[in-house]
Length: 160
Image (cartoon, rainbow, N blue to C red; front, side, top):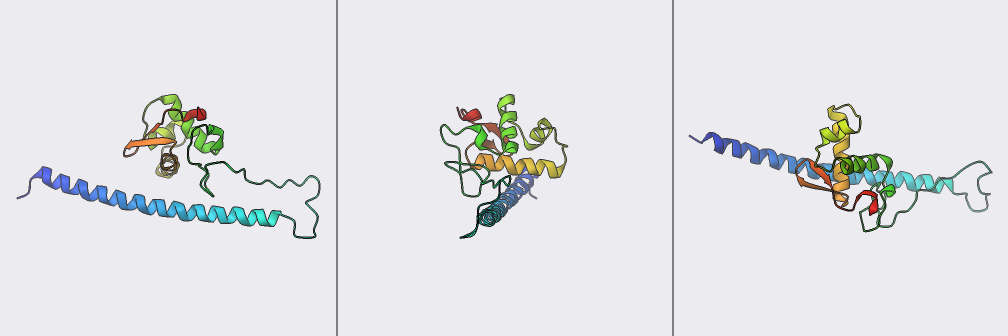
């Protein structure tokens, strides 16, 4: 008869493998989503440009173009961190996450981050936070040394 500890270890291993599969699927889904964002931005940019021979938009009509950030992954709202990159290169939601972690000085999980942001701690909000902090970690702004626990890397707040 197998030991209780052996059974638990086996189930833990199976659960960890499932998590890894789901994380890979999430990365693929995020990449697909980012491609659609890029496509939508490109179409909006093309539609905003006057066709050959036409006049530019009339006075009072602003055409906003997305700012290019050096070191950014095309179509990404989170540029890859590099020395000297300012915190304001991130979208406001991402800046708030970095600020919360900078203010705490400690590792936090996604539920703690959601609460610190004033969000209702429900699955949908926590998963939204998880998606953002995973992206920040993948691009070098945060560290995830233990699964689900995030901290700010030294020098990342404010790009200093």
